[in-house]
Length: 226
Image (cartoon, rainbow, N blue to C red):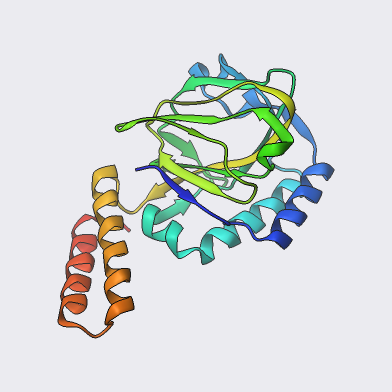
C-alpha cells in the first residue's frame, strides 16, 4: 500500500527544518546504501551524528507521533532515526533499487524494514526533476509532493529518484518495522479503520460501530507482533 500524508510537518516545523538543513554537514549519500544500491546512488546526505541531524530527527519523529493517519497505515513497532538527503541540480539521482530488509538501530538491535517513508522538504517549484518513482502492484506512481508532505510504501518495492536538473531537492527518509509484517494485512486493517472513522462520525454509539471496532481489534490481536 502506498499512502500520501499531507501536512505531516506544519509551517513552523518546516521553517525550522530548513534552517537546520542549512547548518548541517553533508557527506556522500552512498555511506548508508547497501552494495547494490550504492552502485546507483548519487546524492548527498546529512552526516547522521551531527547536531543538526539529531535536532531534525526529533522534529520528524514528533510529527509522526501525533499523526493518526500515519499510525493507522503503518502500525509502527519501531521507527529508525530519520536520515536527510539532498539532490542538487547537476543530475543527482538514485537509480532503481530495493531497500535493505534489515538494518541496525543506534543501540545495535536489528530492525526489519517493512515500510519506507519519504518526507518532502522542498517545494516542487524549487527544483526540476527529482520525482520519487515507486513500482506498485497497481502500476507506477510518480510523486513530487509539497514541502511537509510524506509518502509511505512497502520497503520491498522497486523505486528510484529521477535526476534533478535545477535547484535542490531536500527530503527525509527512514524505515519502519510494523507490528503487522504483511502488507496485505496492513492494507485491510487500514481500510477497516477508515470505515470505522466514517461510521463513528455518523453515529459513534451504533451497534455496527461497536461490532466493527471489535473486529478490527481482534484482527490486530491475531496479526500483530509487539
